[in-house]
Image (cartoon, rainbow, N blue to C red):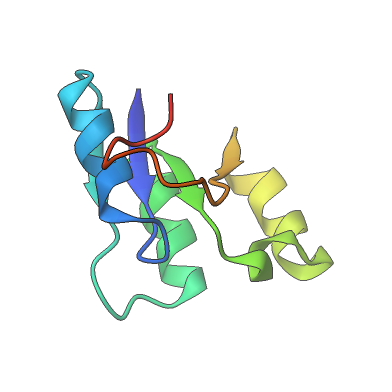
Length: 85
């Protein structure tokens, strides 16, 4: 899986995905939502984010036309330093 991890998602999620053999990268700091979506589309990556701005109608329409899939990472309880499975 090719994933783009938004800056609001815990860094351990990125580490876990890479350890599991996925091609995951972090959004460069300071990227605005439009640029994040553009990067995910250009690199054919699934966007993993906790940013609720992507759920409003304005972004939803752009996501449907530009990306095949979007995942919201949800907060998780402390797991002894392990990312959720």
